Image 1: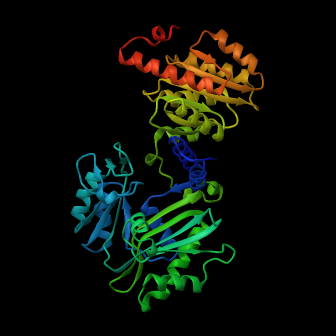
Image 2 (image 1 turned 45 degrees about the vertical axis):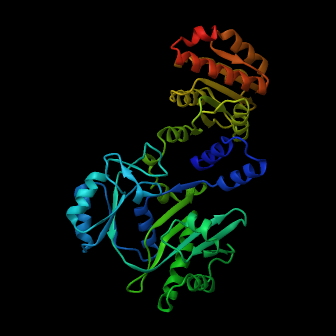
Image 3 (image 1 turned 180 degrees about the vertical axis):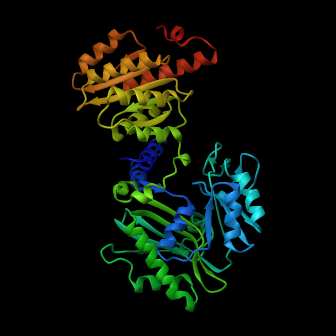
Length: 446
């Protein structure tokens, strides 16, 4: 089953105009990754299972639980972290005005107070957009002080077709900024997946990072255990920032970001049971449950296409004709009436949509069957916006006739360029009609 990672990437890659073929191919290759993200507290639990040292902590879903967790930690120096799947939590703001999704606290009372202000509210960061993301839980852990902070990540590298360990002595910082300003501070170690991370490799990484002599062996074991998680849990990304040497010479993972290959869901049942759909776009979740690949974009021409390649070409030709696609939507190989209806409901839930371009190649499913489903959906949903249908393949002539005889606001056009031009033209007409508050049917002359 496709998840959203691939579709989102394909959509964003091809929704940008004037992208060179080489950069497009690179963008696709980079973003074919299918990755489930999990909350920090889940990552912490996984690290503990593998014997990796992390600060003592636990999750809370209510203010009362937060107070109890803080009491159980046994120290008055703690950190409370909003569990939201987005970067930049510390610099974010909640919809109730609270600043910072990561706060230092000094008592169970403070844990309760901040939990009340975080749980049930939306955290807005540089990655969430203006709507923010709902915080359903907080993670409270003891505050540890680091003598040294490092960055370490285990990733699947498509260029080398194998795992890599990326490490830097400049941990606790924005690694993208480090890569831009001081690329020499980042080291990439390529791993032979048939050999794995040996003691020699792990020790070499730990030494080069700058762990003190008494911590090198512990750091070596931590690196090897992180690779074990990566391999055994079908991870695509394990990012530890910072990986620290504490003031009492312990090697600890202070923060963790995990991603897992969606193709491995069938054998990673526990990991995928941790998926939090409240952190995802509800329409994209709904689409995934219906077997559709749907990504909302910022345009106004809805796209309903079967096949990712055809979907990308459709988005391209809309843009080339001066339009803006409102979504990426791939209904897959079987464009059934039920799938078409679900797809139309998703597309038309966006009030900005002023026209819908249906571009389907009928192979497994005949074009006349698709046309029947299309006509019935337009009737059922009582759609008031124009639909441009380009149906190619088996029984396309019958489909064309069915649409023309339906009396619906569906324009059947065989040529792709002509269909795209018509979609852009009608979209502009509908927008104009809305601006001057004139009926769409009157403006279109239908």
